[in-house]
Length: 184
Image 1 (tube, one colour):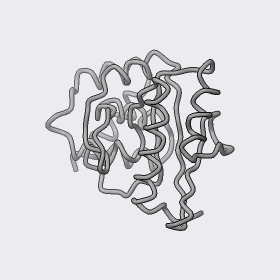
Image 2 (cartoon, one colour):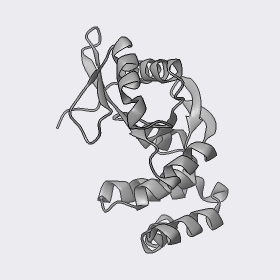
Image 3 (cartoon, one colour):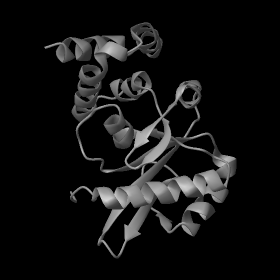
Image 4 (spheres, one colour):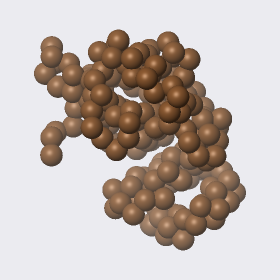
């Protein structure tokens, strides 16, 4: 496993992919490590993960714009897995673009709020939606992120929305367990 990319490289990757996406009319919403950090999780981001309001029909345009900004397509979990290589700094950053293909993902885009992300001001998924993304997986690291998000944001969480969405997704028991652990 490689070491996490330097923050400077992640910031450059973020700037380049945001420029590419905005240039083709697909403004992104920050999710993943950068969004967790924006909501108080104290971990350095390992890469860039963005939710975009596009689909299969726009992939070629998005990939072309990303290549124009110096990003390369990589094998990964989705068709829009990219990598930014910085020869000057001697490192790289992953860039994962997630297409909003489900009703929940489309709501995440609509609910996003402007916020600070590294040295930029971008739409960021709400803390509730970030929790819902992570509580849906079985990964221990994701559970830990849910607990950290709950601890850092307990006073501002819309508990009714979170509960309703988790019940609808069948993840309420996981959410309840994480919330109890966060209170310790």
